[in-house]
Every structure is written in structure tokens, then in C-alpha cells.
Length: 59
Image (cartoon, rainbow, N blue to C red; front, side, top):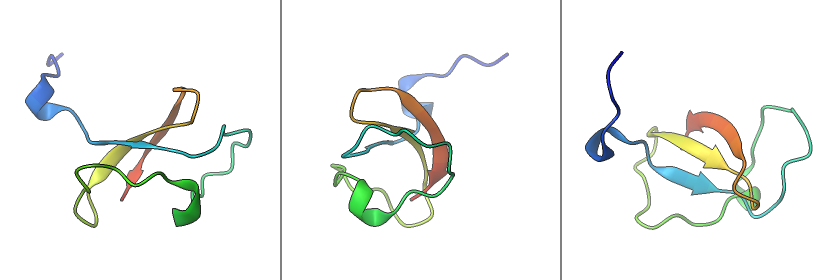
């Protein structure tokens, strides 16, 4: 198994809310503006307001 290094790490997107649903959709108004902003279509890791991992998705 390959070790993930910092250069291979996915960008992180944080939610403004605590995610209480298992529904897969995340809307733009739920996302804090990340810095630096990922390019459209970039795969990102998603964490809720409390720092709990929610999943991965396309930015």
C-alpha cells in the first residue's frame, strides 16, 4: 500500500454545518470558501464543522 504524502493529499473543504444526514448531496451554500480555491472538477475531502470526515467529492 502506498503511503500518502503531503504532496499527494487532497484539498480539504469544510462545511458550515454539522452534517446530520447521510444524503450524498452538498450544496454550495453549505461550503466554506476554501483557500486556495480548488479548480472546478478537483477531487476534495469534505469535513463538517466539527471536523468529522464526510466523504470525497468533486469541487
